[in-house]
Length: 318
Length: 318
Image 1 (cartoon, rainbow over the protein chains, first blue to last red):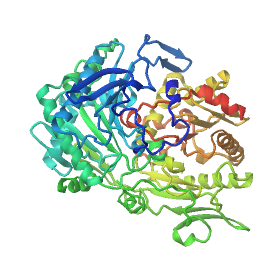
Image 2: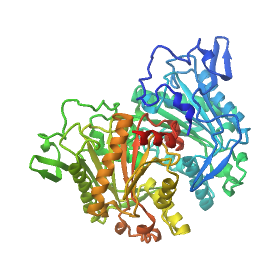
Image 3: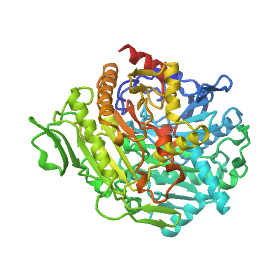
Image 4: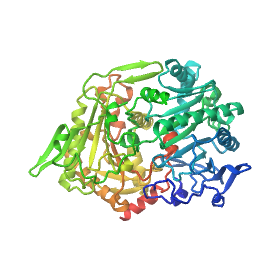
C-alpha cells in the first residue's frame, strides 16, 4: 500500500500517451523539481542524475515494524525509491547512448545499489526500467528506478528458492547450467562475447523476452568489477540496438535480478549461506506488446504466439 | 507457445481501441464467422453462444505428450479454448443484464465447465473475462473465455498448495477463515447476503480488487446447485453495478478460481484427497487502471495507492 502514489496525476485514469507532451520534469532546466541524491557531471553539465521518486512506494525514514493482523501480516513500507535519470537527452535511450555514457549509467546503478546495501533495514534492492506506455512508464524521458524493500518480494523469493534447491541437488548453479544448454544448442542465443550471453529463454513468457547474464558465475551486480561493467555496458547497448532494429521503438520493462542484501536478514536463512554459489545475477528485457489479460493476471499462464527459437533466428539476422 | 494466436490482427502492434469499431464478429448476423459449440435460445433468437476461439491457445485434437528437453520440460498444448458470447447486445455487460439473462450466462459457464471436466486429458478448466483494452480484450462485445489445459498453471498450483498446507495444519479451509475474519472486522466487506460475500482483500494487489465467494464451503463452481447459481447471478449483478457506479466504465479481468479436474491427474497427489474440504471456489474481479510495470512483472510486487479499507468504505456508500 503506497498512499503517496495516489497523488500521481494519472491516478484513476488511463495513462496518457507519454511521448513528448511538451513539458518534462527530467529535462535539463527543471532540476529543482526533484530532490537530488547523486549527480554525475561532465564539462557539458550533468550526464546522469539520481533523484528521489516524487511518488515513492517506500519511505526512507522510520523503523521496520512487522505486525500481525489476524491471518494476515504487515510490514511498514520503509525503504528507498529512487529514480535514475539516465541522460539529459529526452529522446536518447539505451540503444542510442555512446560507449562512455553507457558505462556511466551502469556505474551509477552499481553505486546506488552498493550504497543502499549498507542500510541493514533493506533486504532486497531492485532495479527496473519502464519504457513506453504499455510498460507502465509515466514519463517518456529515459529513466530507471531503484526500489529497496524490507522484505524479499514473492517472485524474487521463488527464484532464490529454485536456485537453492537446484544447487542442493546438483552442487551447480541453475543459471550456469541453463546457459550451458543454451550455448550448446544455440537456437535461442542472440548474441555472445567473452564475458556475456544474451538469449531468449526456453518457453519464454513474452515474445522477444531476452535474458542477459555474465558467463562467469557471479551472484551480485553491485559487486561487478569495473572491467566487467565496461564489457557489460557495450554488450547491453549492442543487444538493445538489435532489439530496436527488429521491433522498432518498442515498449519494454528491463529488470535486474541480483542477490538480495543477505546481511540484513536476521533470520540467518540456511539458504543464504551458499548465495554466492547458487545465485547468478541477470537482466530480463520484457517487451510489452499488449496488456496482460485474465489468463496471465489470474492464472499465471502467459500465451506466447512467437516461439523464442524463431524470434532468436530473426534477431540474429538483424 | 501458441502459434495460432500469431494470426490475431493486433499482433506486433499496440492493441487498437476496442470500442465500437463498426464491425463486430460477435453481434447477431455474423454467426457464421465462428464455429458454434453450444447455443442458448429464446423466442427472440439466441441469448448466449459458446464458440471455438478463432485464435486458440490450446488445440482440441491429439494426445497429451510430455517430453524432456535437457533441463526443460514440455507438454503438448492439448485442451480447449472457448469463447462465451454472453449476450447478443453489443453494449450490455454484466451490470446491465436482467435477472433471467444473468442466470442463463452463469448456467452456460457451469455447463461448459462440467462438460470439459469429462475429458480426462484436461487437468485445469479456467474461466476468465477480459473487458476493455487495458484488460487485454481484443473485442468489446461482452464475452468470456474458457481455457482448459493439460497442466495445472503455476498460479493455480500455488493457491492449491497454500490451501492444502493451511488445511493440514488447522483442519479448516483457508478461505472460510479469511471470510470469517473479513466479516467480523467488516472494513473490507462491500456486500453480503445469505449465500455470498464480496470483499476487497487485505493488502489487495490492485485498487478496488474484489473477491466474491460462497459463504457455504464449496470447492467447485461446476458443481454449484441451481438455487445457488440463481442467488450468485443476482449477487454478481449487484456487485458489478456497484463497481460500475463507483468507477464508471472500468476495464477489468474477472477470473474464476475453482477446483482443478482431479480425476485427470494420474499422479494421484496426496493433496487432491482432501480437495473438497480445503479448496473454496471464488471469483476475483481485477480492475485494470494502468499497465503493470517492471515492479509487478519482474518482482511480483504490486503497488496499490488505495488501501482496500478506504476503497470498500467508498463502495459501500454507492
